Image (cartoon, rainbow, N blue to C red):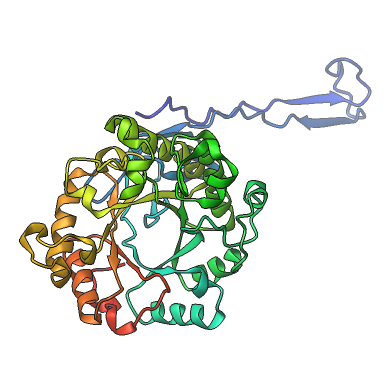
Length: 430
């Protein structure tokens, strides 16, 4: 609804008072022609009440679902959309509303003051990414090669490791705790490489391995579960990883993806004590960490995502990992199941060797995952780019593209072949 409206008030009439040069305190008392008189005009006094406009902005995705956390700018005033995608402005100067949200294409909506409600529709950035290992990031020639591959293909994203599976922090961090536990191993300058990526128009994600960290485990025995695995509910470990994520946003990364955000798997799961915890306890430990991280990172304009085991999007159980798509997707912008057909057991979905069926295995997992995500959360799987031919990689990418989701290619050493990637004109937009 519009606020109260007031027009310009009428100008007050100007009074001209003739005052005799010799008269003091009043009008002249004679009409003597020799009397010198002057005419003084009192300037008009203008009283102005500016009109106040009120507008409700609604930010949605292309399906009309509300988008929370969008930054909406009107003139010098900025607001963040609430859980219903709503912002409300009161202003005396209508103008365009500029809407941005990490991971989404920006939008500018014109507003002249005639309407009291406007809608901004943001389209998600469809991420098509390559993993950038520490080795690749630290090798100028290899990194330049990845930039060239991106320029000649549909790739629009690079995913950099800043803390890897060994627990090493791969740059000269200002987080003192990383130095205190001996975790810093300077492989590259992320500021420089993120700037290069942005100059090429590429989206930059950092991958932070979270609860598998031998350095933290050794230095903080009370937080350790077994081996390198850290208790996801340990306050100190949580704060440490969020500090590294905060710094990543300050460096310039567009998104932080938490990996190994789970309890251990395999034999370690039987040694860690996690089997004695309820599934809800495990899930809450993971989800509450993501919520805590989001509270820090999202106000900085940095998006939060998480990598999960591929199996959890296709089954009801958390498999003792603490990963359930429904709850996790409520706290992240994107969820990234690792859909590697070579990792599925023989007989999965009736396939004698799932690795021989890249399209079918990836497609099935995507179709399992999509209905389990919260509205507004994107599905963006990690796809296999190892042990495969270029044709197999392209086939798995096609399974993702056919279902309208993004993808990221995993290769430990960042060895990618241009022939394994689609071109811009072979995918549905960017």
